[in-house]
Length: 138
Image 1 (cartoon, rainbow, N blue to C red):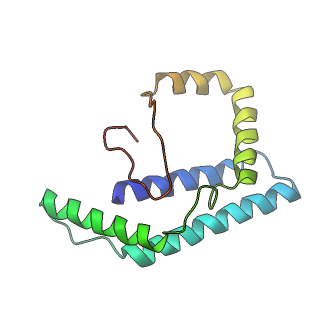
Image 2: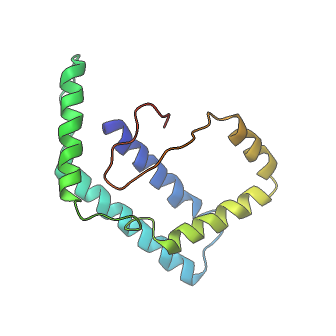
């Protein structure tokens, strides 16, 4: 769970940085600010529920148990979470437009080539508050 939450944090940071690709209009600026507030709220809940990182251990069993406990506390705190709570339709549309513009730009061909070389991830069904499949690459 620690790795997965860190991944979410990294993705959120990248997506927020993506808003700098072009200066958002006033309407888009509000959408980006709303998204940032939603990510900040999620991270506050996560920090409050999960607490600080556990003491270092060489025991994989203790580490797995701690991760499971942290994940369960977060799931319990977010029991009412639904798809769209963080990635609203408006921010999803905004990111889609930004990604489309970037892939159509000067570096688009290089970016697409790089993505094609990446490890493919197929048939991953993601659900709110569900564990990411361990058999799938992040």
